[in-house]
Image (cartoon, rainbow, N blue to C red; front, side, top):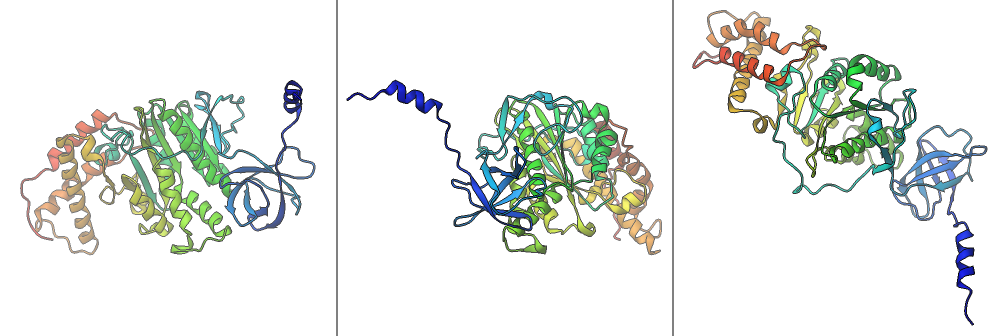
Length: 448
């Protein structure tokens, strides 16, 4: 007997596939526990609340024997035991398109600036496979950031990863705004994670401005959003930057702040039962740092992501565990000094405490020698002022201290810069060479 294959195919095509779903079995704290056949880590689901056809998005953050733990990405009023859980994307992704440039997005990659909808065909994964390190390019060319103290004495390169380390209220946002406006990059991606809503609007309209926004993409997840959404926003911003890098473009990624991403991961880790370690941070709070930072840098197709992250130091403590972990992964760090900020010195960059590990690869020998001479004068100036503060400095006793005190105003004048001021890289380089020549000295001995 021959089977009616045509009829069978027609019936199968008209039969809707069976959708596997789960149920909520426990609600408590930040997490929702439930059942979900075929679940995998990072999988997106929807909690189908009564009277809501769209559901509330939630991410699977832990797998147990027969249950899963989900972190809702928005408020879940009315959730009950028995609420249906619908599966979503197994591999989370974000839509990407050139139309995103000039827009402000949320942690889903959707516009929140009141502009028209963004239509994107392409999607990129939020957690792609790591690039082969032997296929990636090297940091070989300078990338001017438009800040004299950085371009002159802490020169950055295309594909470098830098962390700005400072306490609250020392000028991190202002410095990031200067970088976004002045950097010679093709596209700038700004991630504002855990900020107050007022600060987001202030940064976009004030620090970034219309000129900076015209070639930037801003991804924002404020402090009142769900923990998982803040972490997702950091990954979304990095994925968008990777999309433009893979097109061969020079991308600048600015993230304020990576500390708040780690704090969000701490909340998530503790909620899922991870043991607290250093200062209450679970292991996953440190693990997310290289996960994000290793995605920046040179690509395999000629493009690059030059990334600058901020680390919020508790009590201005440079040994803060999160700041220390970030500094260990980056290619340089910029330390902002509260003392300089209180003296009205902006940007309040402590040049002596900062470093660029790629400066030797992107600058000439003459530039490096002049920068070293200027740093030496700054070091002598710091020592002389310390002695002066305790009435132990006597002019004429240590020649190098006398010279540092004489050159101090000129050196600090070079390091100071208004937030709306910018110099091109060649102008800054020539200024460093001239200043280095003035500060260079064959031998001015004298012990302190």
